[in-house]
Length: 425
Image (tube, rainbow, N blue to C red; front, side, top):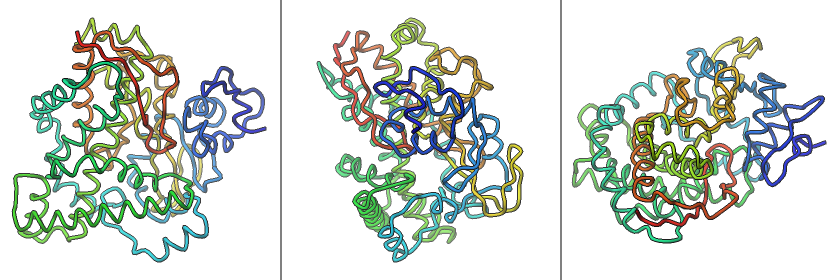
């Protein structure tokens, strides 16, 4: 029997738990690689929490799903990033393997680096993303949000009218991406991030590689332009860091710019879409937030926990280690299911209950350890501003779609569309 059959899915929402013997690999494969599982991985997570919170998987990795285990893995210095480990997990077709062998591997992104290179690169940009620095951006983010909401009238799509243009404007201004170029990047970045998934069709692979090449070419040109005409932006700061102290290679400047830009809007777009859907589909919590706006910070934390924009992370072992009672050999890979950790009943009280006043510590959505999401403070602030202003200006916002339209992704989870009827107060 398939995992879907075990779970008894009805329209993407599980109504019964599996009984008897459960194969955790069926649950994992369905969550990662089937449209039904990608649309709703949480029943599969719940079954894993109950039956196999730690297991050796068919993706050649030890999988952990509990909050405590994920936290410990991500903070263990004996584990780190390894391009080999992550590539081994991806199920590539012979064509994809051949194409990858012909490409020059890129190892200059903070996303895949370990100390000391990771420490050096992160240190050059981290000051721009500290909570104190980010908080000074609140008035600007509020103005951008209001400008976008001024156009809301009647039936509209939240993703295209707010969830994408807000964060791409914020990170675009910070980094120095010209306004005229920003909107074109949504399909390009979405195609590129498809390359993070564990299985792709050959067409999706080709599109991902083409998108990555496009991003690289664009930022190579933008770096050259900023070197000729510096501006007050983060990209110019990265260039000066190299030119003054030779601390960054050209490739490192480009890869850092790509990471900051793409991650700066793709995940926050998911946060805004997932979060507004969560509020609209829980009208009691929406009303409570309207009545108690002081709860906005805890509401954003609960939104991040409830439906995390990032569902998974992983680490390779630098030496033989023991994880949650399981031996992991040197070069072995450990998968942390962040979305499952956020629904761990040993860490959260009634994790299947959406509660904007929940106060049980931060969610695992931004990972942990030295690779903790650099833009966490910015994403939180954008969420606080957006949800606060939307509910204030559109108190009778109505959800038009009964079923959410999720992108067919697992790693980066978000809505492709969210249609609402917006009538201003």
